[in-house]
Image 1 (cartoon, helix red, strand yellow):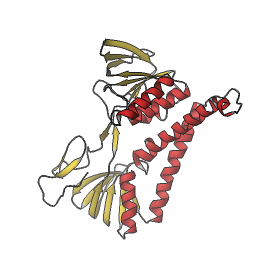
Image 2: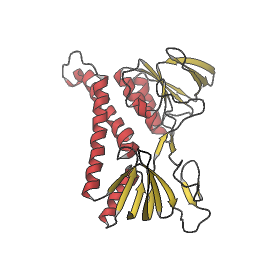
Image 3: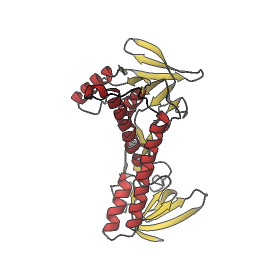
Image 4: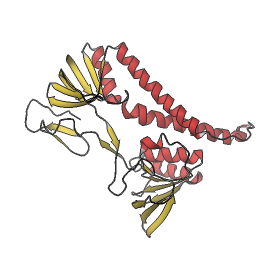
Length: 304
């Protein structure tokens, strides 16, 4: 089937572009192998903010007396909190389905791969392949949790953000490796729920990509909440053979061993660029983006 535009990926970059293109009169399709809405709506910003809201409400309840409200024996139901977060994400994804239907955007389920500048091959869940053609193609494949060589995620004891959003029970202790947006938000949430949290950050400041004043304010807040923060430190290895994870942490003073039920790797994200056909077409890539084609002048800088 021929389209004016095919987009690979239905995250905020993909679905917004699809809706706008359709509104401008383009026959549009989106290739998506998982839930519509991408990581942001399903496994990132939206469900995380839902968890943070539950944590905030719980903290309000625990300090209700400060507002002249008397509340007795309040406790957080961790399973219900997680369930609410997943329901919020599912609702948002269904909203994207509605917008696609309203704007007459085709949803092609499967994994998309570039064949040439006008053709995409889609591998569906049944293992069948089908080709689609389009005058224009947008790559909006998003990213996934970054894995360090010495911190391989097993999904059980060493986890990424996906597992952190769906743990079956509240862990008593957690080591969070990395203090960016993902690490800091989940550290706050789990501490609010009752987990003993330690943050290990390689750089000298929390949320190192933000302004220094933001970092200092967050550090004071975490200290007040009794979240242990280890700056200028790195997790060298994690032994998962026992009941607890034993993390070897390198600090300025030397190596220390810290134990926790869960180690959350939140050291950033990696772009989803593998297997989508860019190498075969001569489109070069680096760690952060896709560049222009080196072989064929028909491809132009902008696949990023």
